Amino acid sequence: MRPFPIYIMLVFLLFSCGNNSTGPEHSLSADRDVLVALYNATNGTNWTNKTNWLSDSDLSTWHGVTVSNERVIFLNLANNNLTGEFPGALGNLSDLKTLNLSDNQLHGPIPSELGNLTNLTDLYLSRNVLSGSVPSELSNLSNLTGLHLDQNGLTGPLPQSLTNLTNLKEFIFQDTELCAPLNAAFQTWLQGIPLFTGDNCQ
Image 1 (cartoon, rainbow, N blue to C red):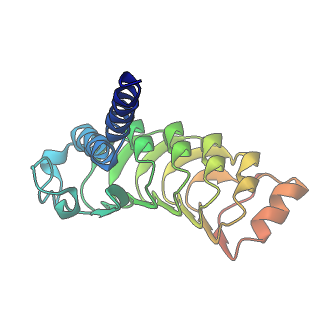
Image 2: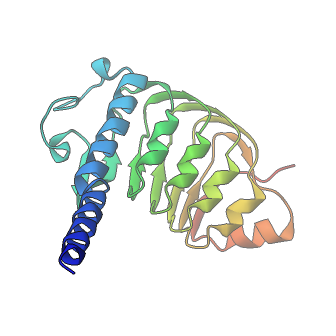
């Protein structure tokens, strides 16, 4: 009968070790990797403000980064001279609530990976040089209250699936080649948003 409690102890130790591998430290380390990828993809050496980026300092001291419960929840790099393509790696910041990359020189499409950011409440991408259509994956962002896409080279009808964003309070897509579909369901949804600006499809 003596081996039995030893077996139980071993199982407990193995279970504890397994839990530690997915603890907060691991998550924050993964978030750091995403931020490093962003820095490298957008010419970070020429950012206007790159205080503590790529350093060993806490992520909470990196310019534009806010951390809560050992995860990055807020990223504000507006008007910071980011250039290059919008990296899809940002879709791995799974606890992110606000992403503000407005007033930069980001180009290429909006990454479909942003649809993974289901905790996101605010997405600000105004005044870049983004192109292509709006990915339908953004309709996964059910907590989104603010979506700003204005003054970009984005084109085409907005995805019908955006009507899933029932918490949206601000939707700005003016000064683009985007347009709102004319069908009744989309127009009813659009008119229900307290603040929206943009054109209808012709």
